[in-house]
Image (cartoon, rainbow, N blue to C red; front, side, top):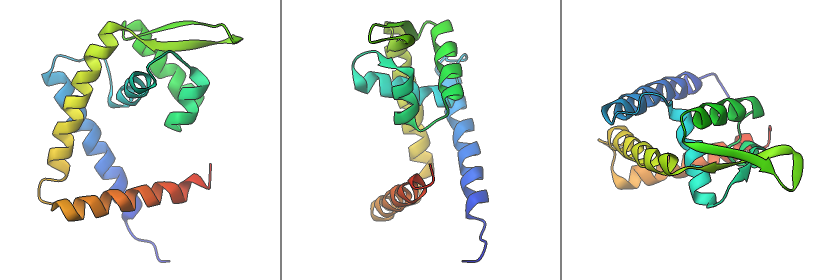
Length: 145
C-alpha cells in the first residue's frame, strides 16, 4: 500500500477536536481539565464503583504514566478520590466524587457539540459507515499492542 496522508489527517482531526472540546469546556466554566480527562471520568461513571488504576490503563488503552497523571490531576481538582486497594496493598482505587459526576456532564455536552460539528455535512448513513470503519481500524491496530 502506498503512503497516503491518512495519519496526518487523523492527527489534524484529533488536534482540532481537542481544541473544540477545550473551548466548549471553557464556555461551561471548566478551565482546569483537558479533553483526555473526560475518558477517565466516563469510564469511572460507567463502572459505577472505584476502579484500580490498572483497570483504567487496560480499559482506556493508555500508558500507566498517562492514567496516573490524569488521576492525580483529577484528584487535585476534587473530581476523583483515591483510596488504598483492599485487594492489593501496592495499588489504589479511583472513584468519582460528586464534583466528578457534575463535570462529566460538561464533558458530555462538549463531546455532543464536537460530534455535531464533526458530522455536520455528513448523512446518517455515511456517519454510520464512518463509525464502523473507525471501529474496524481500531481493531486492526489492537493486534500491535
